[in-house]
Length: 96
Image 1 (cartoon, one colour):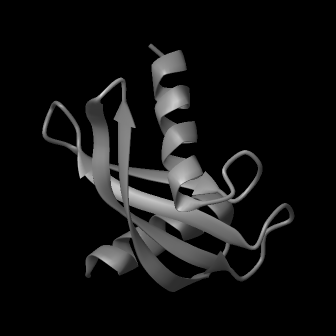
Image 2 (cartoon, rainbow, N blue to C red; image 1 turned 90 degrees about the horizontal axis):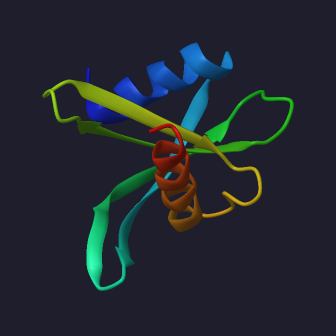
Image 3 (spheres, rainbow, N blue to C red; image 1 turned 120 degrees about the vertical axis):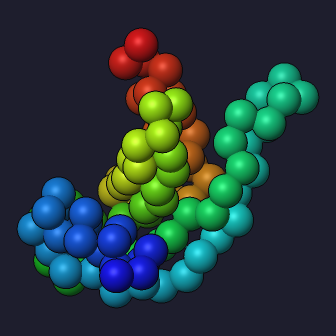
């Protein structure tokens, strides 16, 4: 199974919807001159979801070396890959 398929499986499990990969968008988030996130966000169209037709997703290895998948629905304020990363960072920071 390739990376895109892994993300699609996570999307299917989380949102009970099939998805179609649309594009890969490089995103670099800098805060006060320091890079806090630098990676690629995968953009998917959702086949059936009650609130939106798009989701952003990416995966990374956490501090324990375990793979984590992040998904962010295309719902304001997460209306672009860049904003999805920002929303994820804010959510992660708030959960600490």
